[in-house]
Length: 42
Picture (cartoon, rainbow, N blue to C red):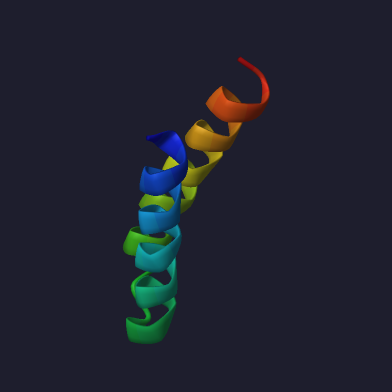
């Protein structure tokens, strides 16, 4: 489930890049980092 949600967040980051929304990129990058931590560490 985390992998699917992380992929969705990655697409939101890409969308944020395309429209130039720094807040959208920041929040979804944080979500990706949390998911990576949970998948790789725990």
